[in-house]
Image (cartoon, rainbow, N blue to C red; front, side, top):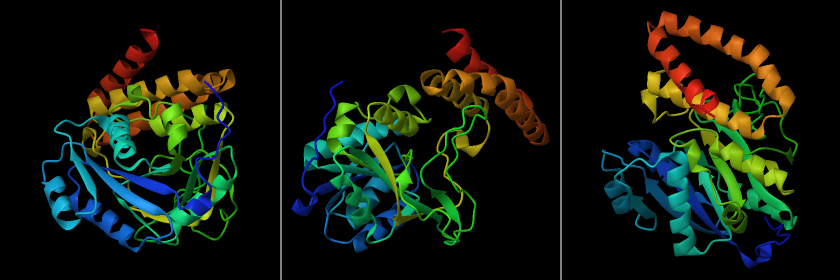
Length: 313
């Protein structure tokens, strides 16, 4: 892999940003997200592409009628998060030839100056990604995420930094970070250089964190910009497994976690997880799923995911 120490364009040239939004049977949320882009600071040239991952609620038709300036693509099949974002990005790169790609979840809204703030750090040639402060949409003094995600392999989590905390300015300092795919501005040339999101993490997994860790390993920078604000619903929408801990959902979660850990965790992180994190998580899952009368499907799913990803490798 070659190290490209190149800034795509000088920021004074008004770089083009292609906004990538995925949706699946969430028309109202998608409309709300798109409406927030109507107020965007006009300095960056913004083009929006909506990728419909197989909705049955006529999302694509409604969006095309209400937002004719938005490029809409309907896929009859759900390509997963990584697959959908990759296909959408390929189409956006062809249609718009953008300097940057901006990924945002459809259950978010954006402040007018957010993209301008996210662009500012790219005067640094090695800057690859930026992300902003994510606040609770319905309680905006509460943090959903501030500074990307923290990966704690030993504990088995990839939580957003500051999740659930009151916003008292404790995360108002810019810093290096690991952005989540729900709010990520990335140079288009970097996205292409690293072949986008790894689709082995389909239908849903840490494909965004995997990309960020690969980018950092190659010597590029990722930056948190606290002035750049977006709002997220307090509970993320789940389009896989219906939001419950079904056998299929548990299988996927286990498989994707072990795949991610095998690829990125240091030895001490793996040891810590098997000695501490895994027993702790397993006990909590058993307690929770017993109360839901869902223990057998959950355990079958976890075992299948573990067996398929670890024991068969």
